[in-house]
Image (cartoon, rainbow, N blue to C red; front, side):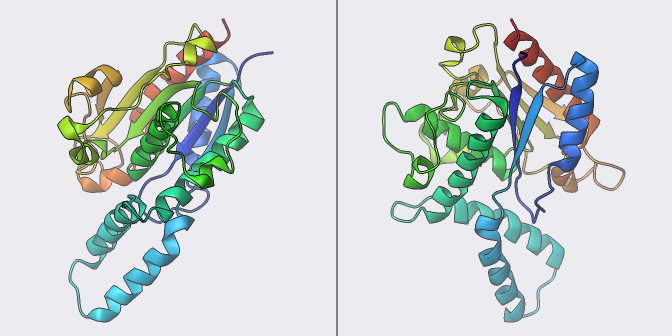
Length: 282
C-alpha cells in the first residue's frame, strides 16, 4: 500500500472562514495528481482563528466607539495582524492564547495521524503569522526531548505517534512569513527548526526534505529567510520570490493575502511534495 503524505495547512492573519484552505487543497490535489498520477495527499486545515477572534472583535468594536479614525480598513488590518501576534505571543506568566492555539495544531496533527497513518511523512504549509505558529510548535516538539516545554493543553491531545511528535516532518512551506521579524527576540536572530526532522531518516530514509520560503516582493509582512543568519541559511533550501495575486493586488502590499491559489506558489510546493512522495515509496 502506497505511503500517503500528511499535509497540515495553517492560516495566518485576517478573519478567515473555516473553509480558508479549500481553494488551496483543490489546487494542490489536481496538480499532485498530474505530477504523480496518484491521490497521495491527506490534507488537514489548522483553523486557529476562533481562539483569538471573539476578543479581537470586541477590541475593534471598542476602538471604533472611542472616536473618529482615518484609514479604517488599514487600521482593521493592523488590528488583525498586530493583535493576533501580540495575543499569541507568550509572556512569562501569561500564555493562555499560545497554549490554546498550539492545542488546535495538536488536534489537527492527531487527525492527520489517524487519516494518513502514524508514520506518514508530515508536510506543513503555513501563511503569515501561521508560519510563526507552525515554527514555534515544531520548535517545542524538537526541544521536548531536552526540556519539557510542551503545554498541558498539547500534552492532553498528543499521542506518541512519530507524526504527532514531529519526527516525520519532511516539508515546510512558508508563505508571506514574518519569521525574520520574530527573530529579533533572540540573540543573533535565533535558531530555526530543523527541516527535515532529525529523526526522519529512521522512518523514511530516502526522503531528503526541505524548507521552501515563498514571499511576494511587494508583501511588507513576508521576507526572505536565508540571509537572517548562518543557521537559517543552512535550514532554508530556497527563498523564492513570486508575484502573488491578481491585477488589484500583485503590485502592492495587498499581495500578502493572495498566496493561497496562485500558480507561482502552488507549483513549487507540488513539485516538492511529489519529490517527497516518490521518495517515501522507496
